Length: 129
Image 1: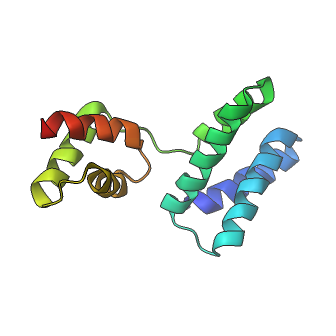
Image 2: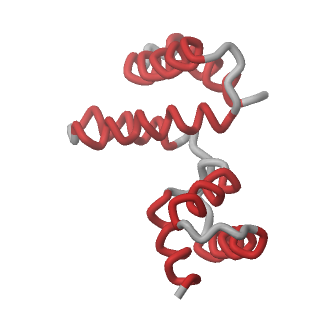
């Protein structure tokens, strides 16, 4: 079962369980994905979930904390510092690029939504020193 199918099944389950917050949240996410493309990749889904989490953090209410908890469940586990450092080292070795912004972009593509740009930038700056 891919991630989109899991989201659809969980939305149905939330409807049966009368969990309105989860049901509405997953419906918003699924409709946003449908609006963009019929068959989104996991990366596109993670990107949308990440945006929804960031928006919920801005609100900073009890309900938004529950939303963050629900959405975080669908995100892949974050990379450890060691794994991230290995990816950055690999990208630096294979790329002739010295622009930090472009290097961060290359690393983000390899991370599949499992890390944020801030952590990658920190490691790149350490390795370029």
